[in-house]
Length: 472
Image (cartoon, one colour):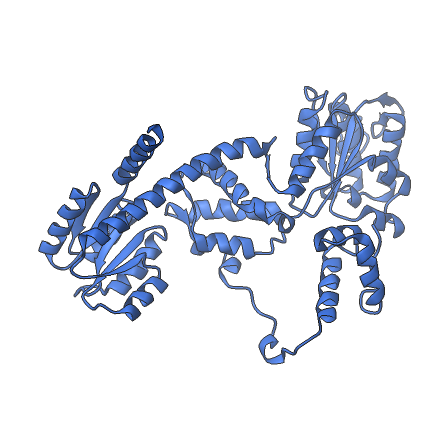
């Protein structure tokens, strides 16, 4: 009984929040239909001016509009298009005196929620309004559950529920307890710095400082001064003595982003710090003891860099005590809805907005995008959309221009299509996955969902086409 009572209360709240607007050139129809809807337990108002109705939609005063298909000032289909431009989340019910399946299908194709015949049947109208009220109540409950779920799935500012990210969280928890060096690998924009912060926050030295340095942003002389400090007069502009990041974070953690961008001389100096636990300020003969945990990050394959002679092998093994790979966004597409919710909450607060979510077509676009910039790109997209949208829901028109256009098909693909064998399809797919993984067979086999032995067998079979792949 309590469950039925709860549902009844929820349904009543949904009815109170669902307001209908009636648009018809005949004032008597507007008044009569408004009264009928009020008697059904819903709020309603009406107008004979379609432009006034569009203004009411823009002001978010109604969620449902019942509009006559034939009006002197604006056709129903034109009104439908304009209303969806104003608010993609509004539900339009078109009423027509012409009982035609073709007209109804055309209206629904263009975004109408329903197309009904005039005169409107009260039973059908009530059923439609009840369906919408139930849908809004369901969305409200889902949104509340997602907010609760978001709290449980947030890991020190990182959100994710995919197996790949849960593995990252688990590894971070394990290594945080031990004061050892950590190497974070993964493409640009996946959130390696957030993982570094999470490791530090869970570590025994979380009460000490975390110092962050982007190694690709500074030339050698400035990078050395930034990391190790300098004394007054060590170089032009050194007007006073300053400690470096290693001294600043003594007892805590130093995070070196893009460590593969360091020159060989700087790599040698960093290796000395790791081995001897001491630093030497620029221009000073004195050495100073430091005790820091080093977390390094890179978007490059350091093993390949070592083989190419661009990275010191001894430094690589010092940094690579524990390695955590942060997956790209395309490897964790199931996390996009959760990330969007997290970002909407963040930017609603930052910009003073009340955006409720994304339209379905916008969600489809986000899931189909290849995300070369990973989570950083997604955050920029949501941030920009939150600024520009004037509606309760972000629509495709609020996204960057390059995402609004459908992905171009391969030139001539339709005309040049020819039947191929399954072996050819397999070979091409393996080539593409290997290329995406930069030749790393271990990663490729995980993405393909096959064992390494099977992948090696396929590579051997297709050796002329897939030459150049490397083992992990």
